[in-house]
Image 1 (cartoon, rainbow, N blue to C red):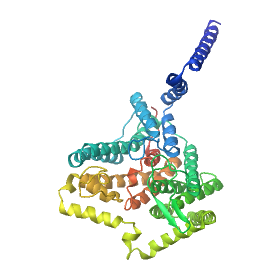
Image 2: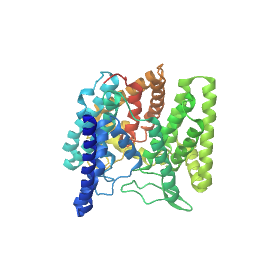
Image 3: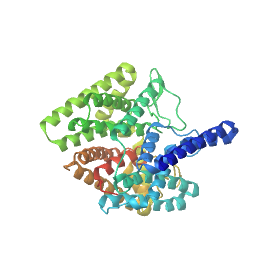
Image 4: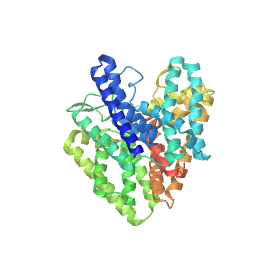
Length: 462
């Protein structure tokens, strides 16, 4: 009875403290009132983050996919709320340091080496472009490091024992894609920071669908990623088919509204890879009908909602397919000219191909004579981080494909699903790297590397 009485007194004491705190919040004024109220809300959240190994990941992914940048004059598009949860995740990783069990392998080494090369190139950015550009370069390295930290946290850290629900992540992604469709149709005011990307039609000028991301290519890459997931899930019959098909229409519509061609090509490459992996007549027939139905439904919806846009998009795709050899620079929207500028710079200054000019300095520095957006991951890696950086990127691509393929052939159904997903998608990523710096999509890349980590992790006792 003594123990029960002590427990009652503790409960009454806790209730009294809460009542006293609430009274203090009610009586406070100004900034103090808001600070006390925020502490009352944040304290349980921080306790949850410290207690549950996957709590910060849930909050990070939700913020990364569903929140716009803050309307503050900082960086290119303003600081993003998800960075706060990434910092909390780093803190959780330090607090749970005894739970880490690192594995030495090609994939782990490739990720660490790639990040190290990016970090070292910051010195070149400082030498050639000055302190301000070097700070931006270092910030970009930090953003790239978030994805790699997520991978190691899930594959070798506290996330080995448990991880977030794929179903939850799917619903978050679907909400983000749905907003992107609404954003394009209603042309909502752009969030704090966005790339000025428009579609010129006879009926007016429209901002390309960007959703809650900085620019349209990121949205397109994000939609392609989950379209590949849906295709794998349908072939493997691991989820509700009507739900997946309905979601596929939403992701396909958002992809079309983004006006991206490279992401559509990437989806085609990923689906072809999936067909080669499955190699069964039944899977082939199922996937063909599924993809044909989803694309037809998506195009029908887009045409009904915005017929002029659908016609313009189809004309853009067909023109690119039939006139690429004769009008490559026009089809690639000036990319060829940018590539020629970079190749010409290396031809005149071949020593810069050894160490590079600094990671992500080309769009912000005049060191090579003008500011250039390379829109080619391989070429930008060569110019910005040198031969070593390009080699690290190629090895990383190979390591991811190797790990994904191995997991895809696993007898473990979960590992096989995630392995197939990342293997098919990364083949598309390698193609899209020819026309976009996809590894800079830091709000999408952590999800990709989370899938990779789920494919390779060994769930052993912590």
